[in-house]
Length: 378
Ligand code: PLP
Image (tube, rainbow, N blue to C red; front, side, top):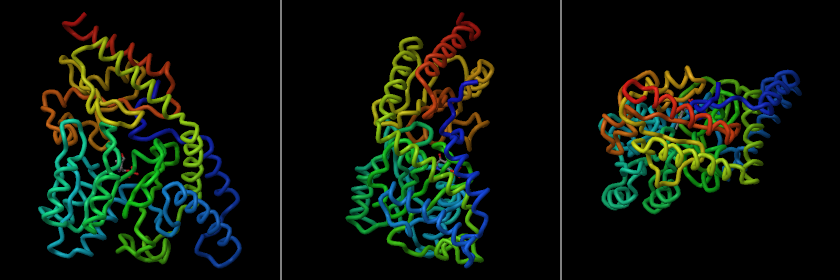
C-alpha cells in the first residue's frame, strides 16, 4: 500500500517514537510537582516549548500546548467570543478548516463574516484591504495553507494589513508547519498547529498567543500552561512533537522539500498529458510541495476513485478527513466557484517526506489504468 494521505495524518517518525519512549520510561513526574521528578518533567516540557518557539520566532511563554489543532482553534474563537461580547464580529476566510468555521459559527453566528476566495483558491486580499478601511472586526482569520488544495495563503500580507488597523490576526498553520520554513509565523498574533501532519504523534498541538498574554481558558481546573489551559501536560507526546519538528527543520535547512516539489510537479505534468480532461486546482498558485487536488475526468465520482485506488494499493482522499465519506462538493472548492459537477470528481493526493519519485510514478500509472478500465473508456 502506498500512502498519499499525509494531509489527513502522517506516519509517526522513528525519532518521535524514541523521544516518546524516552520520556515515558525515564521521566515519570508531573511537570507541576515540586520534587525532583516534577522538575525533570518540567525541564523536558520547557525544552520542547523552547524548540517550537525558536521554530516560530516567538517567546516560549507565548505557547500553550493543547490536545491538537481542533482544540487550539476552538480556544481562539471561544476567547474572542468572551472578549468581544454580544456585538463582536470576526472575519474568516471561506476555506477555513471545519474546526475554525464551525466554532466561529457556534460563537458568532451571523457575526462571523466570510472573506471571499479567488478562483485560484487564494483569499481575496483586495477585499480585506477595502473592507478593513471601512470597518474593523475583532479578529481576522486566514489559514496559512489550505488542507484540500495545498494553496499557500498570503498570510504575511494579511497580517501586515491587520497590524495597520490594529486588528488581531489569527492563522491556522496546521498544514504549513513542518513542511515549509515557518519564518514570520511568530509575528502573527494567534497561530495554531498540530504534530501529526509532519511526523509527530496525533493528539498534540499548540496555540501561540501574542506577548505571553492570558486567554479565556476553554478547560478550567488547573494552573497549567500559565493558567490558560488546565490539565496535566502530556510531556512524552510533547517531547515527540519537538523531536519530529527538529528533524523536519534539518531537512528544510537542506532544502529537501524543494526536490519533492519537483517530483510533485512532474507528476502533475504527466497526469495532464495522460488525462487531458483532468485539471489541477490552484495550479498557478504557490502551493505546498506535497499536495495535488485534481479534478478527474468525467466518468466517475471522487469516492469511486478513492475506492478503486484503495483496491489498487494507494491510500488517497476526497478532500479533508473531516468530510471523508461525503459525496458533497467541498466548501473549499465551492468557495472557489468550482461547479459541483466538477467538484464531485476532485481527488486529493497528499505526499509526505517519505514519499519518493517512484511512488508518484506508480500513482500515475494506477490512475491511467483505472481510467482506461472505466466502463466505456477501454
Ligand atoms: N486545521 C487544518 C488546516 C487541518 O488540516 C486539520 C486537520 O485535518 C486541523 C485543523 C485539525 O487538527 P487536529 O487533527 O490536530 O485536531
